[in-house]
Image 1 (spheres, rainbow, N blue to C red):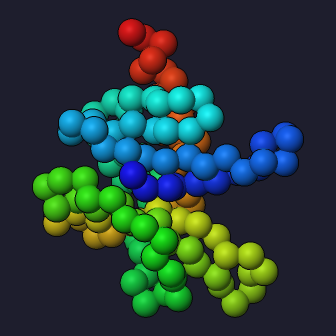
Image 2 (image 1 turned 180 degrees about the vertical axis):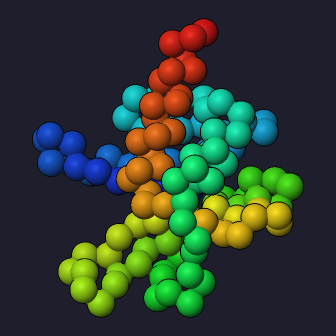
Length: 122
């Protein structure tokens, strides 16, 4: 299981959002319980919104999730020289693709939307 995002609830408590792999499927786990993600949803979001990842950037890896077939998702924290607070990014890589990164909050929101949409179709 990989923590991909964290936000503050109205009562001030922190709420974490995780991705968990179960039987070849990805689940988004958070306050709303578990949301099953459509096949290839993570890859589609990362490729659509991702920018090339600069491996030389000053990033600290917070965790990683092996997705199978050589694909991997990493949670990295980056503190640019002009930022006061580090920003969380997700980096997606697979053998035939240049690694791409997207702000973690954007990925978590897009995956939540796709998971809720898939749940409502069933």
